[in-house]
Image (tube, rainbow, N blue to C red; front, side, top):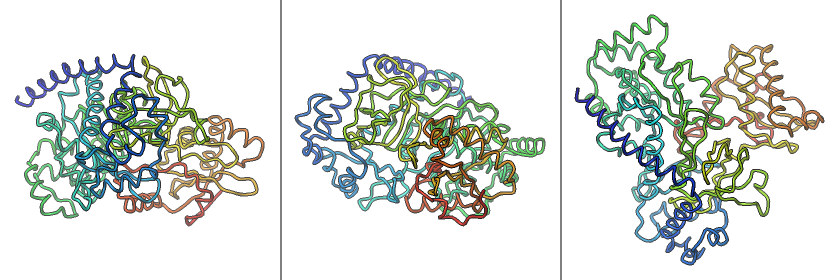
Length: 560
């Protein structure tokens, strides 16, 4: 009864507060140029006395035009000397004296180095604000969702610390750990579970607690591959989890730390009724996926854009027809879009958090590219995104390629396509990771198969071609693999006219399939996570590696 009263109160707060904030935000879209300038000027003011600000004469910047004329576009490597100083405690490198760094958001860099992104109070405020707008819109479209519990899956914000003791990790973990009391009542997993270092133990612990709760309405995580992993673990460990729920125990074969066991003990209760229900579902269906044991699940929130759509297509077999809403274009550098529908991955530009500029895709990499503001974009065109945020990144080339799907007033509705670095061109074809994944999805659908991971890479020969790296498995039969290769080539021609022209002119030969050992991609993932200090939930498999002859780095079992 108390929970129902709490849920009702939360729903009314969200409905009233959210409705007002959404209305204000959407009204500002019609005058986005004005609000973008206001956002930029505030960021410049907060860094005007920094070494970076002094170098670029921030005190004399009065307009957007002044800023763009004075400050060049920067890469991460350009900013790294300043960021390294901040990591050592010297905030004056990028901020006014006295600025407090709450944490460093960690994300994998383009090299083995990990990026340490300083999170200031203002940056965190803007990040939360954008997330709240996403939540308000979601609740408006799914009005009954707040009557149920929420299961977020995040990484910890304090995985490690700098020499000065500042926590480093996931900003989503910080947000989850600092939610207001009433909001935390809706969460079913205590924060400490996310900090369990061993991934298998973490997921078992999470499922041990989450499967005991039947009333979950929202499941949210960044990477949809996490959702597939969660579902498979639920089925893999169903017998032990059911027994633990029945007995009120935790008997996972690997040990939790003593501190975690003490915290876990407070969460465990006997629940024979729920255990019997789960056992019945498992017996009747010969499996136990979330679609069976979370009947009130109304929405899944995850990234849908770019290559991750490859996983979205597989969710129904584990979660039935539960709708999936894109989380928006979010990176450790900030939230950039706010989706306003379950359809697709398009989101409205978050004009109140960051200042945005855009380089047309065909201008990127030229000596003097055209750089546009949000109101100058065209529907249907692709752009590289240039970001100015409150983490000290000014005119930062984030290397994201977006597509403008629509315009709302002066602000675009954008969809993430791919990271710019995942472009390969042997003979001027410029194929993208997005095109490769879409072509493979079509090929898999045509052949009636599912391949979780693959990598396409270029190969030099008398006539160069592309290699499709696949792991060897019992399902790999030459007949359908030949058909998969043929159809992949056909669809890639359809999606990329330059690739089609190069193939037709025999400047590119037909792709080949190379089989490597099963488990190879998992090894690559584990090595990457260890060397970059990244997190499993944040890891993105590379479907297009532009490195020439990349496949020769592996032990090849077969090729054709």
